[in-house]
Image (cartoon, rainbow, N blue to C red; front, side, top):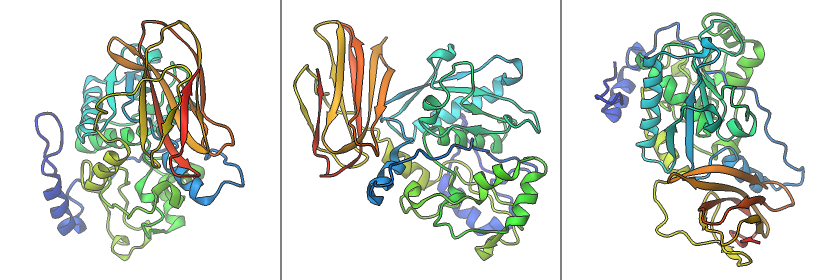
Length: 386
């Protein structure tokens, strides 16, 4: 089995992946016990885009729409009520270590545990009931946690089994990957996987998953669109990949008669992808947004501009973009040295521009983070506060 260092992280990932490739037919390296369950994502329909949106524009929107603005501080909270959502100290420690492992990639996001659920973007439960529909392990994907579940008493992530063994720890890494905006890798349309549909539906309907046909189709049989994976190659060892029981796959041939277990921990592709979406580099100096002074937006898809705002007067301000751009714009206030989310707007796929109206206070410090999805004339536009 894979080894971890004192902090709980896997060591020697490359060597493990190499040895696993050589002996994977034995199913004994990084393998969970055969009764291990699978993550079941909430069935969230894709956001509707206007019918006249160009395919290239739609592809860029889909690729980025659930990702956070880089340099966001994500706060997570372990829910204590109701009592059956409460986790053990061991389970909580596994989640803390998993957040740290993602941070150490390194990426430009921060993760901070908070003790008030109203301050948390990610709220975590540990409901282990075998057949309850809201049990199991699952997470909202990326920004869905704030867009679709704003109620501070409700979960945005749940763990349905023990996290203190190796498979449990990988489950924590997997669900946090969803919270960062990453989908299931076994649903990559470039995988070439052809499922034995009847066998798949029968298997997931039984123990330990007890899934409905709808859940199985959503989490297993459904193929992601090319826009969601951006043409990326299939990564069999991704932390976002299911383990696959023998007999569920017709193609590729090497997976027909043996279990497939992704190598433990974050794969090299997981790490490269996380760094691509969330680069760790800090801007040397943030430009200041001043009233009625337009700043040009000249960046490429997926890139981001950050601004600081230090108002001279307390009043309601409007911050808006101009030009033919699809963007997400997010406003934060610096509180005790930490940026806290206040408001945001996503204009992607629409005919209007991003706009935030908010009362800003004198002698306080604010940040605007603007991420570009697409521009009709690459990166040409502007942002202004008035």
